[in-house]
Image (cartoon, rainbow, N blue to C red; front, side):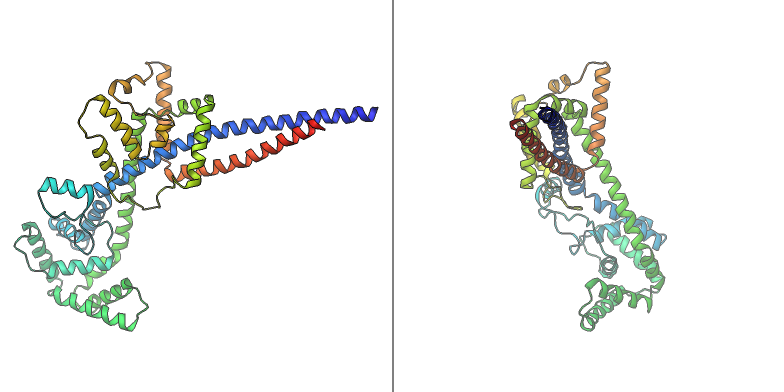
Length: 413
């Protein structure tokens, strides 16, 4: 009987241990679901911020082209001191060359044509130029004759740089350009395995080092790569500023309070279950994969969405419908449909979301500031975080189910 009592005692201890383990898994799953809901919200809004940044400052304002123009202008002044008043015109003309920059299309083209009255969409500044391309286009710029429809500033810049290089014995840019093109063709016959940039670089260096303009080319070669590195750094810094600005705007408009969102997800089991199901489904379908590094949208998405859904006449009801449609257009549909965030349909609705002046308001502002900081981590971070959390949840669910089966088996025994 003693043995039987021992066995009964062991069974009772086993039940308690399994029950505690199951309860532990359940608690972990609860908080994992809260974190999944939060990460899902951050990912959706981060992707919307990314789309806005790519569409407006990068696509519309051409931040990369602006940064490259400033960098190359400084380089030209460094290589040819005294060219300060004309360097920007020369660089701008080169970066808008048809070989580097295709004509604008889509929404941007429509706006530019509307403002200028031009039939043909103007070209934007290229955001990328190789050293060999820049040198050949610079020689081509000097070799061209003045055109009647050219701006006087372009004609003056051409005359100034030709005069400056003539003092360096580079008096015939057209002949030098022809020499470079001929040598590139010869190198292609001799070394068909070389890349076009290798052939162009060798031909340019040979032409300049063996003839006029040696000092000019030596400075250009020595400083071009460092200039491009600084251009990339300046461009990245400006993108971060714009990202922060759009993040602040979205957080303020949506009243995205990290503390309030986490509290809702923790308390509302129905909302939590819907968000987790939506997040798992979206990740399995690959709906929220962030764009690749350097990737851009094909059209000015934010402007197109705003023009289509927000710039429409009508009363307050149409504004509300427009905001909902704008949310769908900008990729915020999942978050708004699940009521994780919502657009205020008018100013009164937006103002009513602020807490009265008290400790609650301070806590709300702190939560919104935290949301801005977390959004600055970027869509790739939240995509990876959400993916890892879902994988961890799957593992914990399997362990929870195994513990539940073990407990039921033990109780039945």
